[in-house]
Amino acid sequence: MPLQTAFVNLIFLLSFFPFLRVVPDIEAEVQPIAGLLAGLFILLYRFKLDQQAFACFVILALIVIYTLVSTLLEYELTTTVFQGIAYSMPILIFLALKDSLPLLSKRLYLAVLFLNLAVGLLQYFGAYEPIVSFFRLDLLFPRSAGTLELGGGRGVSLFTPEPSYSAMIIMQFWASAIFFYVRRQTSRIEFPLLGAVIVTMVLLNRSGTGIVLCALFAVGYLSGLSWLARYKLRYLASILVGAVLFIFSWTLLSSSILSDAQEINIRFVTLMRKVMDREFWGKNLDEMMAEIAGKRYLTVYVGYYSLFTSMGLGYGIGSYATKFFEVSVLGGVDFSTYAVFGELERFASQLKPDSFAAAFAMDTGLLGLAAVTYLAVGCYFYRNRSGVVLTAQMPLRLGMFFVAFYTVFFHTATSLPVPWVFLAIIRGGFLPVNKGEVLPFAPVVAMDPNIRR
Image (cartoon, rainbow, N blue to C red; front, side, top):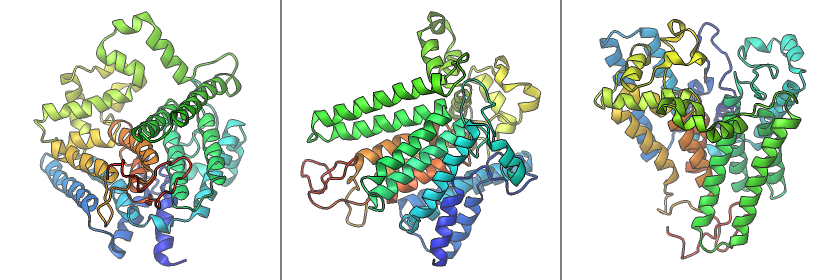
């Protein structure tokens, strides 16, 4: 295997294990070692200088500039440096993968997929802890929950601290499965089987984040199909029925087979009960947001609200440690009322927006938010050398874009590489189909004159 190919596959492999603890003295949950390798890869090998690369360089430049600003404002140096690194890592991973996707190994992907499936099954059946103790995996994944001990009807966490993070990793497996399928490396028979494996992992995961991401993909996919007027209504209806059956089976299995009979507390079901409760509609806006989307989404709101309090300029890299509570009070959010945050004195310097874009907007202002938006949206509207929009498998791309956009702007740890792997695949992982060719699950006729190019 050539060195460049090995490099790319190692970055791809490590992107599935962002919580791998490499430096034991660093308290950060996410240590994406793949980002460091991606930086080295960028120095050693050429990549295309296109609009997405330009947006990445703008983001990296803003990180450097606002790090200097933070130094002048006398923010805590350690917080500033680590936050700057956290912003840089997923951007570097995107840069390394965006033009190197054809080098990815399907065998490596399958090995990692079935390893995670095996770990999920071991965690569910309570057989994971002895393996962790024997191989001392707790040194590499210290916050990985070995069993279903998190409570609240939550499922397995795989190699991550909690199921919501592992749900994102599972969706990355799905994005990769789509990539290998549209690149003709996976057969029409094998692709549904991979889908079945991933659905099994979603069922074991039982995360509200997982069902939201699946629903977003389904909405994007169905929207793409509906945009293609040539397609028969019965095909759309079959997909819609399949989505409804999936949600029903997921809820049923999660609440009965995969849960204790005495504790049916699945987040999707609990959410429906809360929304139907008459008392819910009498609460304040921040309380309603917390009930529907969780307390983390309030931190995202604070991140975007900071654009008003900072006059669109941002507060500097790592500003959350000193500015977060000040901005939250100005935005009408009182985090002291939520027990989930524990002792405020302990977490006062750790609360920050739980999305890359919201956190970056708080630190770098409108310029940073504009650069991230330009990069994310530009990946979907990427044009190949002939100037033709790559819409050969548009429904799949649109479904993936819905997931990527949601995770970048509304729900993800800052340095988690999952949405950026999504964007890399959306940008460069799809091939135009031949004239008249129709692929299952990606039913677009490439040369159809009714499709806008």
